[in-house]
Length: 118
Image (cartoon, rainbow, N blue to C red):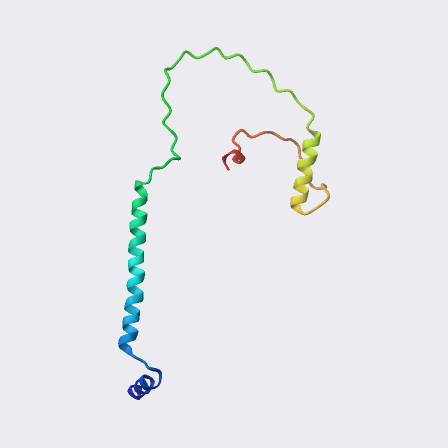
């Protein structure tokens, strides 16, 4: 029964198994040739010079440490406007317009800023 179906399909739709296998082989062969070419191009990337490298810093001779004087104490400034803006930003990010429920007690600068890295 299967044979009669294949024979009928071959007669009516021009089904040719040899042509189908040839098309499959050409398609798969094309894909593998392109993949091999791409891997070759990627392998050649190591020969492209990297211009982003910074030159190595020359080591300077060690000098005597200078005398350290105590730093002047930081001046305390009135940061009420900055605190109000930060409080409003926190309230807006929480989706409320009221600042009831939280208080900004202090604002301090962090030395290692992630904004500088980005």
